Image (cartoon, rainbow, N blue to C red):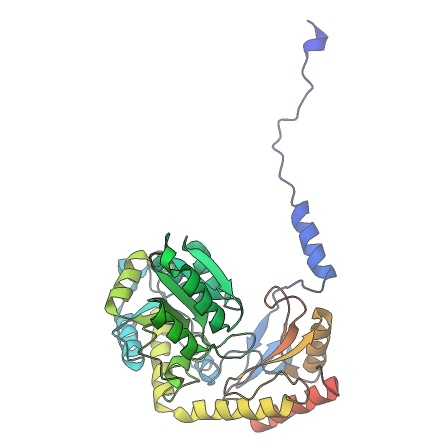
Length: 399
């Protein structure tokens, strides 16, 4: 045998791929103060959250009307729906909720999704397609951004709340596309400001475009009956396709879209997150129906959280002059540096106040902040504790 022809001996054991590249990326996040980890937290009675056995007043929840806190204290049946809505997962509770949402929203029809994220991403991806143009606000929620990416439409991200740029883009490009879509949050979840809906609706009318608005953080809070920012600005008819969530002010889990019957029928046939996801459990849907009835029948919840928003914003304006007077119960205190945001959040937690630090990539680099979320269930003394602690920690302010 010619030994020079021998091949080197190789082990027959399969080699596992290395995940060293993941470790390097995670270490980079740690070095920048951007590493995230799940922490076990549980809700207590009222607006209290327990973090590793330490109780704090919860200023991090989107439970704007206090309905989620109430639902936690009521036992619910644990049975699931069993299948997707188009198989056996769509029962009487689901049908009644869709009917009640459509009636409340003054729309022809409503369709349910397994989450607010699924409603946003699934709706945009299903309705917009190749040959279409989408104009999307730079600070839109990730679910809207992902829906735009999945749609195969041509996409432009316009500067935040800049309707003039939307108008200019449509003037220059609308004739090149079959359909045009303007996509925006109504209330922006990290900034607590409201989109220029009237100006965007005017652009849509002027250039034969569709305006789609995600009302996730406005539903239950804004508007005469709590339908959101479109109601508050008198634009319900001008914005026929509106997306909502059941997981913020409504206090449970899920998403929905209201609009013309043609639109909801199309989504039932083309929105993949709806078609291929198991439907929400009947008990969850029943809890959502009860919450919608509470929102419609108990306007004092909405009035209280709006009053708290105005009060806290006014009290914190000396600390951050970028805080504006508004009815929105999301209040950012911008600190800029991620490490500083984490430090102040930790100091607040030591004082018994849970206020999350929001860092990139959730917000743009250099804009890390505290995000205060208010609820009608917060007591006056809890609100004053928050204001006093922030003034003590931040002193003369942050800008």
